Image 1 (cartoon, rainbow, N blue to C red):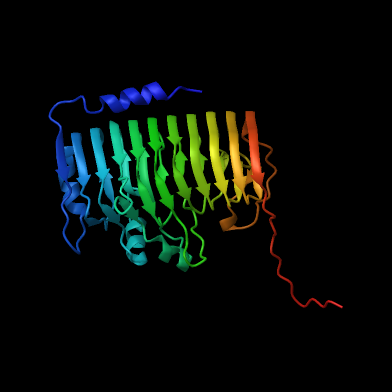
Image 2 (image 1 turned 90 degrees about the vertical axis):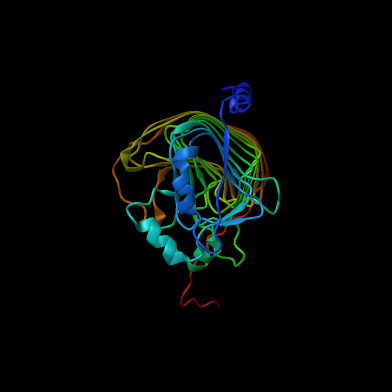
Length: 354
């Protein structure tokens, strides 16, 4: 595996070795959308700058923020950020052709840090997901943070409260360090927090460590194109495990290499280590290791599916295809814990017991 320590140490030490560094404090207007003022200022603070959401303020991020390519920029979320609470309002925004794909979109640039707060009361991003889960509303849901095509990026100390859905996606980025982040997607009513994936890794040379994730889907998902991914020292609760894939959807050619997942606690998740690829897919997933996985109340500590399909659109399709994503050099090492009994509910009608 790639050694990350020296690389990220140099990165963090070197980010501020630039001239004319400026700090921009995001303006807040009570009861109004704070996004437009920030968008207007972004071109002037896209290089050698700190963008500060100030502690003590709850900012109304009522419309999405799409950042330009940033260079040597730190975004500090020291105040709280809140999405709109009205579901139809968000659905209309997400359904529009202009929606960038995530509520917070970072695309392109280098030396970019997204930093939250270690203050337990501040630095929270509130997605108002509870209402969506209760309504079982899955149409036009926003993704949270798209951190794509960034070279030398850091995601640290971020805290997400009840996201609508997917949290952090890192497609196409390289040399990324994500640590000490917290995601809390836990329902208070018994409704299920659908698709609240923690981290979706789709780039190269990435280290994820010391994160805390409570959710209703993959704690980690590693997608096609991911290489040299290291995920360690993390707590996962309530979700669908540590997943490679899904790979090969629609006959796509998958390529995943050099993934190490270690020292992870899995509490009351459905799966532990999971591999999933679609029937009819192609490509190769190789040199993948899960080790030192401690699990509690997990029905399937290891689960491999090579005929994955979208259960939301119907039953498993009939196919004569024999193509599958190939698996090479896969290791499961030092798994320990308590397996939970998994009972499939059945519906009985007109049953007479004598």
